[in-house]
Length: 400
Image (cartoon, rainbow, N blue to C red; front, side, top):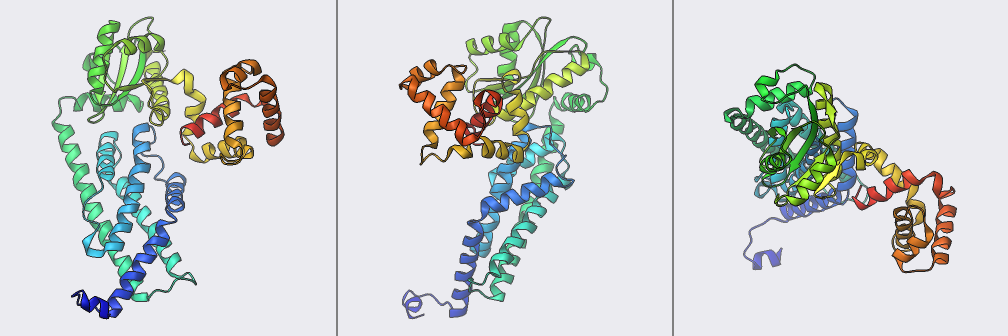
């Protein structure tokens, strides 16, 4: 207290104690952030909130980023009291805009944040009840009150951003076309004349992300000499369909490599015919986008990543595959990195030990010894688990 007075601060001992306890409480919950976020997403997946927006890969990826930012926003607001928790995280704002464009209701958006806030409150109370935590009942009430205030401000900001995005989209000339495309993708009917695109023909679905996404698709379409149906999905995302007989993803890839498309990345489905083919190729592009959002290659083709994309759609399954097929090899500090690199080189060389040895700069005998070690640790032969191992290695590379 004497030190505080010497600093010229008029603060009571009780207030300082409660503030320190609140800071410690937040630190305890922050140390469990990964666990908290996994609980939030498990509840979203298992409940009625899991469906909305699930077909839009960019929206799904943005949801995790937004919830993570909202959790940290809430913790800051609790820690700082009235001084913090006012500026809405940009990740949350961006996700509110995506929700409006993806047709996710504002009620669903808000319910997801309320769910996250409720679970955050549960974690706060768990830590406050810990035997080794020296806090006060008054402090916990203050923390929960600050959390409620942060949530109230956040929900107001989200509603405003969501409504504003709807209004901006409503004034856009492409809004009617985007709505028609959404209805068609959902199984509704539409006329080719209204879209200016032949739905009965052959299609290749693409999704472009990056600055100038729509312009990049237009440029590629001109080079290919094909029809283009393109709808904007925000400032840096566009959904598109190329229409031309005989067109395939390989031709799009070659054209993209030659085009000046800046940093735009494109996810591509496989060719389809008619309205059903038009829907399917878009779903394939969405699946390829799940991989592209983790691994920013210039072009990601569904045929090249179909199995990986299917696994990425289920986070629990992704974690299980890595755990089953890579965890037995050990972590990177005890030789696991060497075994993983050897396995990756061996599979890339189509199970040719000599080629793998050349790529690694070691002898064939060394590679064969490492492969035997891998089989012993896994308890199974590599040749019968090649697909699973390749997926597990890619998941680990993508942070999956």
